[in-house]
Image (cartoon, rainbow, N blue to C red; front, side):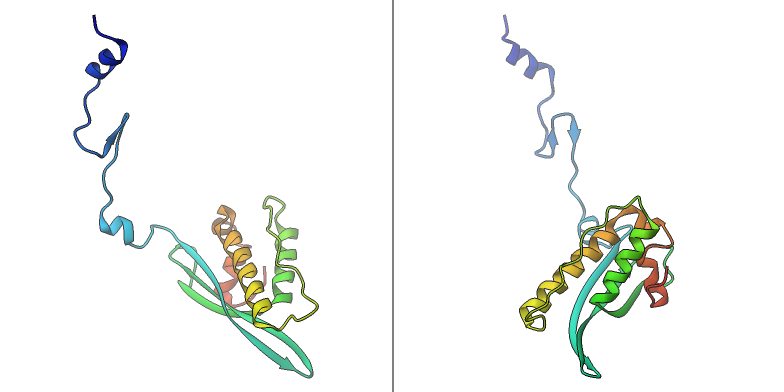
Length: 158
């Protein structure tokens, strides 16, 4: 009489390759599948912070780059420059327009040493994280009032 373990192994076929596991057949991805352009993508990058001075007032603005292959976008790549207060305004506008999306917070306001390289870089990373989360939300790719669509016209208008 066979044990239960021996009986189970006798009734199921032995894996013929290292890619067969359990009830699933795994096939190795091709190089094109691994490294090719994704079917649909939307990338956002916040970069190149620049310190500006106008009439005695100093602020930092950031370059925002959007790259996509989604068909609803007129431009496949666009770039605008925005300052922190523009991000605040835009987050508020998104919050008013869509109660279906839980928006991430912006990096906090800084009142001392706000123009040091470390503080500027920390804020840039926080703004980029905010934009990537908003861009990654499914409604961002479908709702024409979303932030991403504003890049096509180089404005923040909804």
